[in-house]
Image (cartoon, rainbow, N blue to C red; front, side):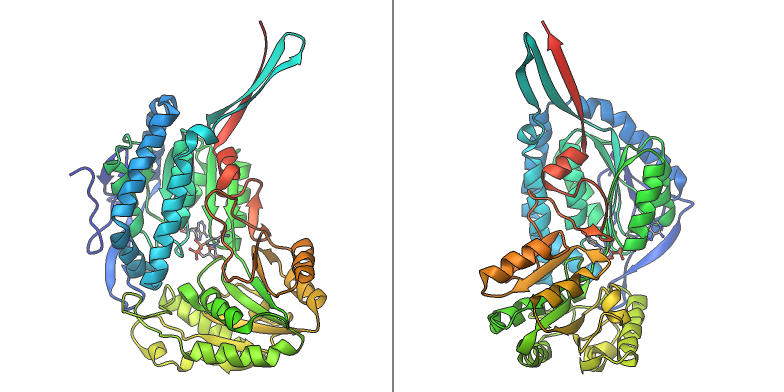
Length: 488
Ligand code: NAD
């Protein structure tokens, strides 16, 4: 059975050159369901031998794949899209099982992944070059796009489907062959993505999956057979990936951490703002690079806003993401829960006002890794809970006198991924757009994550590289250009 992985109750395998293979010398890591602590699977922390085999398989497949006509490559992605749609519920369930986010959020994540495949299936148009017939008398010039070769993708735990789908569909549509190193904390869904690719008719070796942790990452960064690296994960690792891969002559895009600010103006529709902020701060247990981690309350909106945020947080249902009506699931691991509780203690010690304590929720003392929605008021930029990315259901409210001060607070962050403004004023929107430091802006909405046909990323310590993920940037990242100037 070359195209079958053991899912959910067994030992996961690597997918190399079209075959599911064991890595006998690999250490095995348990993959628990964060809502229950029960082991779902064991993932191999593969060694360099498995990575070398994957690079060799990808290199062998490359020549045939890059010569496969672009519309034929696209047709496989059309089939893949249909398979993903057919398996939507199953994929969403798997995401909730291994990540913990609510089933509704997981359904949305599957949609975001499918949209990336739909975008990539436009490869015949996306890969077109440009020509000018007369750059001088009787001389023409044309730009042609070609794939790079073998490229690697390294992904985080928080979007087991969407983030890999930012990478491999477009990379392979452009004619590259691909090696995915998914998060060792959410490795199961990646096996399903590989199985469905095989079912869609992707030739062996075009997509390869190597499970593991640091060793596989570092192997990819240094491997001379790998041309480019797409990375999404935390800031220190993104910086390491960027520097190491660049030092080894590779093209790199490394999307990193975040501390997104949502500014609420006195003229905002408070009901809508509170609903949006609930979703953005506590949805996916705050484990989103686009999470609203800080609310900046401007002027006299602070008192009513904080009261309503607390009221809305009290109404959220906490529990296993597969249960009906659950909004807030667990964080990913017991260690991450302990780290979050540490941040809450530190917030109190540094003088922030703990308005709602998620440690007191009943779920927080159960078997899963739950932390209830936590709300701090009177947070200041000298506090750790303002400065660092917590990646947890903890929302900090900072107070500012006016929009200029609010933007100044947001811009003081070393991150610059997303930012939102809640207002009814066109003048405020313009000032925000012109002055805020962030790559993805939202006006009167909670999570301004761009669609697959636009670029996704921020800057400062939220991004290392030049070309962002997705959209035309993604096509440029996964292709190299040749200029042909000709006289006939
Ligand atoms: P992480 O950095 O711990 O892991 C990401 C990947 O890097 C994993 O595949 C992991 O195996 C590998 N890795 C971890 N430590 C490593 C090390 N020391 N050396 C080499 N490889 C290593 O990130 P995570 O906790 O899985 O994901 C959460 C982070 O990802 C958050 O910081 C979040 O903001 C960020 N993120 C950013 C975006 C974005 O678009 N900017 C999107 C999603 C997640």
